[in-house]
Amino acid sequence: MLFFSYFKELVGKEVTVELKNDLAIRGTLHSVDQYLNIKLENTRVVDQDKYPHMLSVRNCFIRGSVVRYVLLPQDGVDIDILHDATRREARGG
Amino acid sequence: MAPGLQRFTDIAGDGGPRLDAASGEELLRMDRAASVALGRRAPEPPGTLFVTTRRVIWLSETEKGQGYAVDFLAITLHAVSRDLEAYPSPCIYTQIDAEDGSDEEAGGSDFEANGDLQLAKVSEMRIILSDPGQLDALFDVFCHCAELNPDPNAVRNEENGWSGGENLAEGGWIHGDEDMIDGNDLEAHMFFTNLIGQNGVRDLGRSVRELQIDDQRFEDAEEEDEIQENGH
Amino acid sequence: MAAAAAAAAAAAEEEIAVKEPLDLIRLSLDERIYVKLRSDRELRGKLHAYDQHLNMILGDVEEIVTTVEIDDETYEEIVRTTKRTIPFLFVRGDGVILVSPPLRTA
Image 1 (cartoon, rainbow over the protein chains, first blue to last red):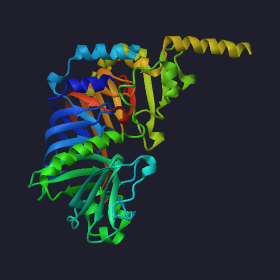
Image 2 (spheres, one colour; image 1 turned 180 degrees about the vertical axis):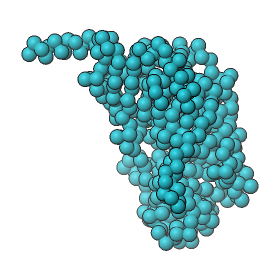
Image 3 (cartoon, one colour; image 1 turned 90 degrees about the vertical axis):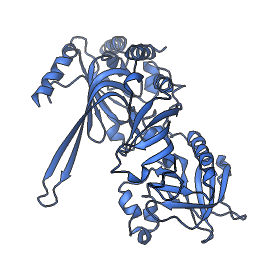
Image 4 (cartoon, chains in turn orange, blue, cyan; image 1 turned 135 degrees about the vertical axis):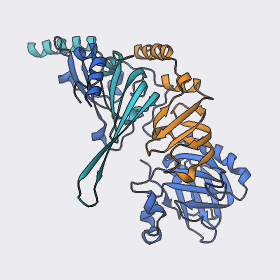
């Protein structure tokens, strides 16, 4: 819940999604669902040596279960809000 | 783990694929004159693409009764590719959860020789439509189907408020009670295994998580971290 | 029997002190932690958010990836580590093997 809400707030910002197969895709976060599946727009592959043929795709849907990391934008992290949300969730709120 | 790409030969009387109606599988979309390209192979001669609530099936026109199928569960990524530098035709690009050791062999020359064995190693598939204008619509159908087919271990985040200790235990967490907090010595070593939850794991042994908390270390954790880093 | 009852009571008390392992992680909020991930990845960073799946957001992250290659000729193991820093990172919990305060010794 916490991260689903968090990512919804992040829609429209640039992120880099790194997959468990090492593919890293940078793009604008278009949407996220409750399984943390991620849709990106205007994407490009960060490591072009490894996946040159995926150079640029317009839309990209990534299954949540293959995500290793999401590199977040500096302005997309409000530490105080995150701490509060985490404590609230931990208390069962 | 869903099997990756498979050969498909289960053809119904009307020439279409026989669907698993018992499990509620329904046809959502059909595209004629569609090609698929597996791994780094050249595209197959055109055939018919069937998108169902459960999987993508492609049947050959030139070799009647032959085709491929892949479950949405195994499609880990899909994208609209229009970059002609990346691939000569606009297409839907997909990545498939394949067996290890995939890429090289899948596109390599031994593909034909090993036939079906190699299909499970195909980690990329492209779908080329006769009308590239339909790619966005097909992309949207794929998104819809991906959401219809969440990972069996996945937990919807919405339904998943924080659960208390007992609920957590029911949720598959096992506590190593013997090693729990000892009143005087606040050092706790806990092992707990996540059996279900969204953390679908192929190898349970590796999913054993160790959580080590040592309150004495907590106070000056930051400092120790620096010492450690300097030590390198 | 009495001993067993006492043990049960003691266990119940422990339950009150720390209901579950994740309560311990809560103590690490806004602190630097060490996270070990699958495929020989290690992270050190400040914990800013987590949930019950051990999904996390870390800040000022240092990632170390260790790869082992076998030399073709000598068959010796060549251990390589690559380091990078990431300002803010969401980590999906299903890759997490271990969470702890920064280790005392490397």
